[in-house]
Amino acid sequence: MKTRAVYFSAVVFAAIVLSACAGTNSQAPEVSHDGLHLVDDTSFQSVYLKPGVDLSVYKKYGVTECQVAFRKNWLRDQNQSRLQLTNRVTQKDMDRIKGTLGADCTQKFRDALTAAPAYEIVEEFTEGEEVLILEPNIINLDVHAPQTNYPGIERTYTTSSGEMTLYLELVDATTEEVLARVVDRRKDPDDHRMTWTNSVTNKANADRILNRWAGQLRDGLDRITNLPLEGS
Image 1 (cartoon, rainbow, N blue to C red):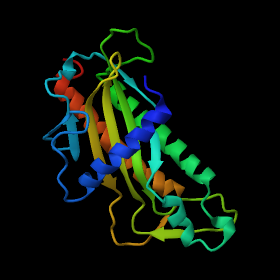
Image 2: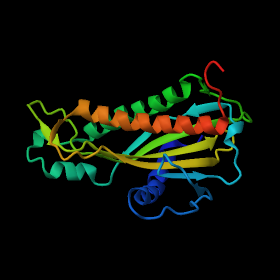
Image 3: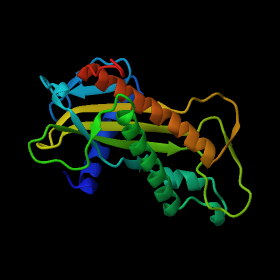
Image 4: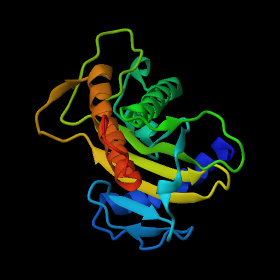
């Protein structure tokens, strides 16, 4: 597989353009930079597919570890309003959030695939096997009120936890060719009511979005593969 660090840098660059289109009134391009074509989809905001590809031939799946990237200048913007040095958001805080969210994202997609009736997930494969690799990434993460390791009592009230964008690619394991791409930007709904925001509420709201993404992908794969219902 591709070197993850180099690959993810390229992902973030490409995703910024596509996610901007997904989150505004801009029309997503009909053809991506690598020749994938935009298709109609009622669940995700943008879905691209290689012309003529048949995803139903894949009977085995892999899931890579989800990579996470914050929106540009997130750390700087967070600390502009924090006057005390003791409660500033640090790089360690960012790494902790990325690690936790990335692990949760990976697990949600794995759980969606292994829910009954389960797809076969493989950790290793031999060249030539028809294995479809799911490569989930979260980009443009914007946590409005991150909880830090500040030792004092700290309470932050917001009307929304924030937003994040899914950038998911489906890749042939042998050729490493990208066969499909999903871009979907989701916000925690702003209810215009100030509530206490902390690590617990942030995680709950993020899990709600992750569950939605994983469920939508599972539904899509079921339609493509015509997977029989349990007990049929």
